[in-house]
Image 1 (cartoon, helix red, strand yellow):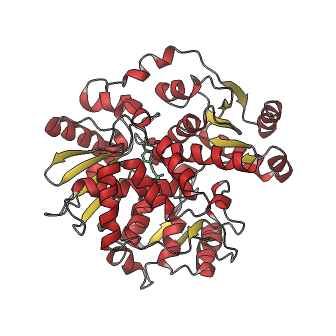
Image 2 (cartoon, protein in one colour):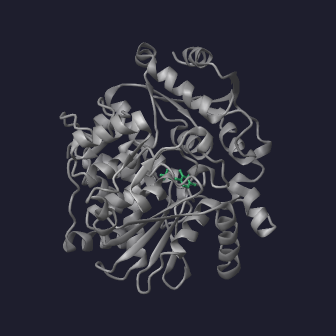
Image 3 (cartoon, protein in one colour):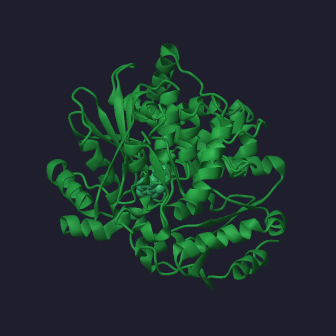
Length: 475
Ligand SMILES: *Cc1c(COP(=O)(O)O)cnc(C)c1O
């Protein structure tokens, strides 16, 4: 399998080449040249593998279709080591919870940091360690976080050979639980840097440091952001696992509802669907930051400025643009790299928007690719949390509530609806208390983490200070 940039750079690449890279040299994102097609026999085999050998074996089968530069035995060992009951809390890894006939939650947030990003990041940690060891190389991961991504990255990379993490977060602006989760890590290779500023300042510093190519090369700076293809690929697996649990036989259609921000999660659903998994509709659920909902309703993609980006009670979906969206548009445009480049490198950069409403292709977004969408408000989320708890006795977090709210508008008789549960309620206690008048339960390993000793350095919002810190902590 070869990978190519969405913007037409003709050089084919292998999985392990793009594993440690971010954007393609032409600014595009990597996609496999084609999606492996699963016929009825192949799907039947995957269903049996999942039923008889479990999630890790299913992950190995799917990853093998996309990775031909890691020996099979090694890849299998990496999957077995990643998707364990010890790390993900249950033998099923992503169990389905039935809320009502035909309405399910797929639990993706029982990993080490209690959010779905663990599903991909835990695999990435093991893949990075493997590939760096094979090359005799080292990597210093520099990132900015306002919550889930940073902690998932740190828990995936802690103690890994050849890897250090430098994670910037806005000083005093994450929830107490999220701060405790990250800052209580005592691993020598994990460096928390609290920046005296807001999340945008953190991101600007990451961009500034990464733009210094000499520094970047000298200190082997890399990233683990959501455009990484390996992360997306890891997420494809749980669409299969959810499908096999919700249906008796292959061929039965299902719909998925996906709380969305950067379009990584639902893009993995698109990939699964393109491979032949019988997903009829992919329901993109946004919060008040509805740049994706707007596109799927109108055909107009309009990125938001920071003044127009709302701080909401589902903060991991507070995005101004959806960084993985280019991948779907590349498929929609038949992988015409020049046209993708004109939209994302041209129009979007110049005018902050493009509009496909007049293009006949836009009708295919729904008819051929199955995408529909909706959005929610804070009041909708609070109502959904109350309703699901009242009717089904299940406590959901505000992001999952976005998914449930939008899913309910798209339910169809006879088609199971699977809502992806993307975080546990304990991470967003304030909204739970508002909705239910009680604290969410806390999994045992997280009892009292706020009181643990903290490992964090506070720095002013200046790129040079962060560079000095990195230089001082690399040998
Ligand atoms: C990251 C995140 C999302 C959004 O996922 P995308 O892949 O960015 O669309 C939704 N919910 C939670 C809890 C998250 O951490």
